[in-house]
Amino acid sequence: MRLIWIVGGARLGSLVGLPKMKNYIDDVFKLLRFLETNPSLERLQERFPEDWTLAEKLLAAAMKDRDKAKLDQLMKPLDSMVKNTKHSSPISKQKARDLQGRLIRQRMTAIAIERYLKGALKDGKRDHFTWLDRFILRRLFFTRQHRRKLVSNSLFRVLWPILRNRDMLMPLAESYGIYCFYSKSFVDGLADLIKSDRCLEIAAGDGALAEFLRKRGVTVLATDDQSWSGKVTYEADVEKLDAKAALKKYSPSVVVCSWPPARNGFEQYVFSTESVQRYIMIGSRHKFAAGNWPVYAALKNFSMRRDDGLSMHLLPADFGGAVYVFDRNNNARENMQQYTDGTATR
Image 1 (tube, one colour):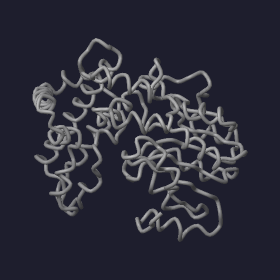
Image 2 (image 1 turned 90 degrees about the horizontal axis):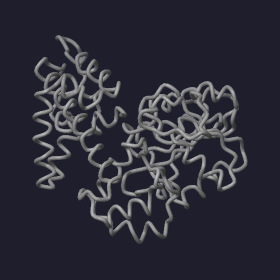
Image 3 (image 1 turned 30 degrees about the horizontal axis):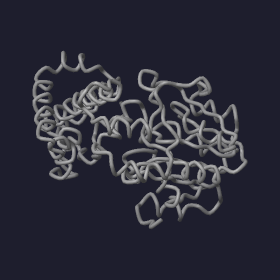
Image 4 (image 1 turned 180 degrees about the vertical axis):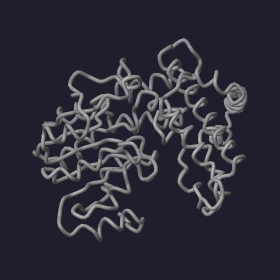
């Protein structure tokens, strides 16, 4: 499970103070490293029984009352702490323990919800979703093998407003390593950006985007290091290569990546590959959610723009998806600074 799920949208870095006195933030990072090993719910229950007792109680209450605010408190454990923590204050032992407890309960809750939603989608006899919701989810977004469909724009406009549990879609999708859905309009627009150049998709996951682009006439190779094999089903046409190796092997003109993890270690190789003239990053309007923004900020030979016209065709539109286009040039520094410091309007 990705780190962004762990922190629920808050910036852990803002909790790290100047270490004039003992700072227990290292204990928190040790826990984060453990959680990034994707421990099972059973392992978490065994190691943190008191946290599971509390998490189970809070989750049951939120589900029973259909209280979104209670659920947000479980799924976004850092939000209130960030608001009440001074940037210059180190983390005390008690605050570190509190934060660790919140993160543990968030992961437990996320896994429990993931299992709940998977069961609801697979088993038509269960009552977690209405029959109509199950029908709409399958008709709009998923094949019978739970792969993404290329979403029909017209069908989406008709069926999406009817779906009762819209807020459940993305947690359900993320349980299968899916972080957005592509409409026909989106794939058409993306194909126009790629044109006829040699294209490589890195961190391609299940390979759905490359498949949609090929049907649109784009020549694209899909690659992934396949390190998420427990969560993502990799198709045969997704070559097992990490980004660095794939870039070296194929020397592409255009590179595409959908939802690269925040502060990942591979996007830097895109910009250092001499053949790359354009990089298209599909991610989020929120910098904490995807992409390596410190790397973007340091770029000197690429310009950056957010393509709002294309971004609006990522579905669901209200989840904050965004498309960023990086083009190689020699006068990019000023343009790049506007985006990374937040002053750009487009």
